[in-house]
Image 1 (cartoon, rainbow, N blue to C red):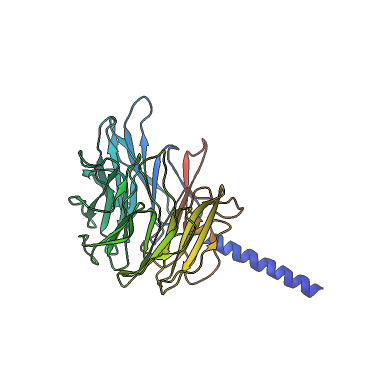
Image 2: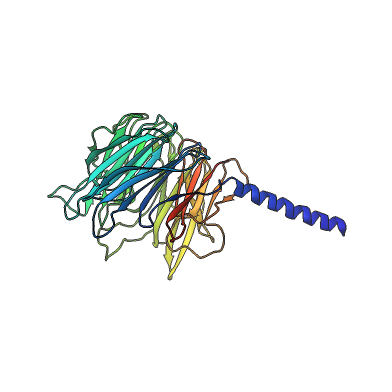
Length: 428
């Protein structure tokens, strides 16, 4: 009897130790003061350095806007700096990125109320030290996105202003490049993918694989544009399915490897009519070429997908369906050979949404109206095995590093509610 009790006690202790180790990989939360109404962006590098950028509006009845960034070296405290302020211009959600040496880039769209069009601005600087003043990059519209290449080049994407005589419901991306230590060069307009503009344009999503090939995609178009490794001209255009799709998701990993998924439905600029759902399709990228389409679901009720590619060539595609007034979440594993397995329901709705360059997977509630299941809402599944490591709090933002093994998550806290933002960083 004593032996049985001792064994049971040892098992309990072992489980508690395992749980404490899992949580211990997340750093103690650090807070920074941010207005509750601010529009916020988050970035982390492989060392665990964090940058939080946000735009805030002036107090009524004044217009105006201010863009700030809070910077923190791993284990240190946040320091906040003001990047730009205006009394007559509003600013939308910014984008922020941190390269492998800790240089930070912040970009944001701004506009004068009552006027058509807008302006894209950017600033950059180190985690500590002098920053270069904000400069105009181009005319353009929200949303903006940033991605950092392995050689530290930074790619900025935004929505180009539609031609005055064209279809005002659609536009295409604008892009600009920045070399480390230098400001953005002249922006260019791409011919694809198409961005839908119901109220705000769907984003042009930039990404880099490990060889430095740049990719641009968008949630409502199956066209993917690519550069050569280390290049800046988008010379390769691939149409993966019908031009108009829904929930297009592209994830890339090693050189010329990745995974794309989408719903064979349709985005619309008509907010009242809404998007058209459909079945889920995926194509694996290997050797710089996309494989044959694979239909993952026969149901025509899917409305969003999330593809995540891992360094070994495997990955996953997850999606959400609306069936009989309920939301279902499903996932299909993709092997290193690019072949997808039969879909499986995900009871807790936690699915891979991103991964670090090393292959640590980040699982979260990716889709709106997921099943309500008690348990963690964000966890990291370390590359190479080991227990899942739940975050200390449900996140409002999360991001994985592109140059190492780090994941950052934020959530609102403080009194009054939301007056501070807490940040925790996972590292193995």
